[in-house]
Image 1: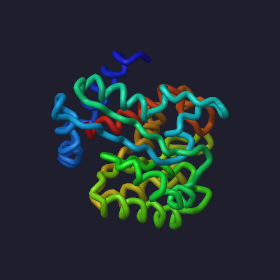
Image 2: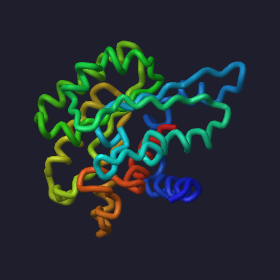
Image 3: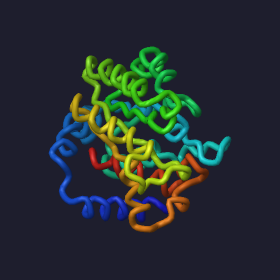
Image 4: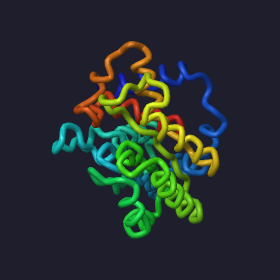
Length: 233
């Protein structure tokens, strides 16, 4: 799917979802204002994507398709919307990592980039460490970012073909629920990747068509995730 069809696709999703929530419209107000500034009044905007193999751009391991991953799909669309903006996409994600490992290097490798917006995407891999440990780790990262007045957008897990997305209470849904509650508690943003993939399954469409391998999205899958993030811009 090229950029022009993708733009239309995002518009269709927005119409289907109805009017964006007040939080989505207002949460990045200052960032959106900065993105609209022209030289010489503009500045570089840093978008930092922290997490595991999905934001890192892994498709069928070990292939990494950086420019088909959702951080760069977001960048491409933001440059269309904000042609005067200087935007850095900084990916601190590492394939195979969970949030315990991500927390250890958070101050040293993430906050040092001085994010204008921070995206955290660990839920898919955090199944290996358990729900409570995941919640504790994500909470600490959110608290550290908010102390520096950095807006945070949490991402619910993308699909894993080994999980029945339509089964109530499935393991991915549990992490999505946990992250939704954290976002509500700390008044951060939330990009519901899980909800997008579940919607595909609920429409009786093949989730497999959106996957490069069982637990990594393909370009179409990354576009679903990007559409959730772009609601905030």
